[in-house]
Length: 138
Image 1 (cartoon, rainbow, N blue to C red):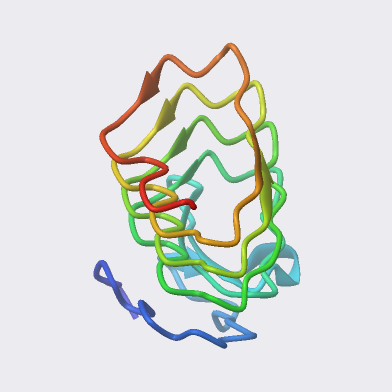
Image 2: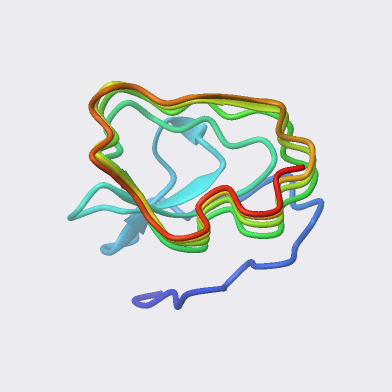
């Protein structure tokens, strides 16, 4: 496998496990994290309801968790500097998010339609929150 496009697992509402076979030259699932990480950039490409984001991940790309309604919580490590557009859109089971001091940007519609979201902590380090980042979070 050499390419994973946007939306690869979008809408897989109850996806519980993701792994990349060891030896893949492009992607990995380090530390049994239940996610796909681009090895050369440390970007989290795709996650699921049981993902534990490793502390080596530097960004969560667009659509990484989109539509994962079974995701109820996520811990974003201090190594992450950006959260991509649509990254957690339609994760209706997500109830709270604490964004670490390392994050400087939250992408467009990043947490849109996370209807279960009742608590968000955004640190002073965040300089940009793009359009609709929390739209539909009733």
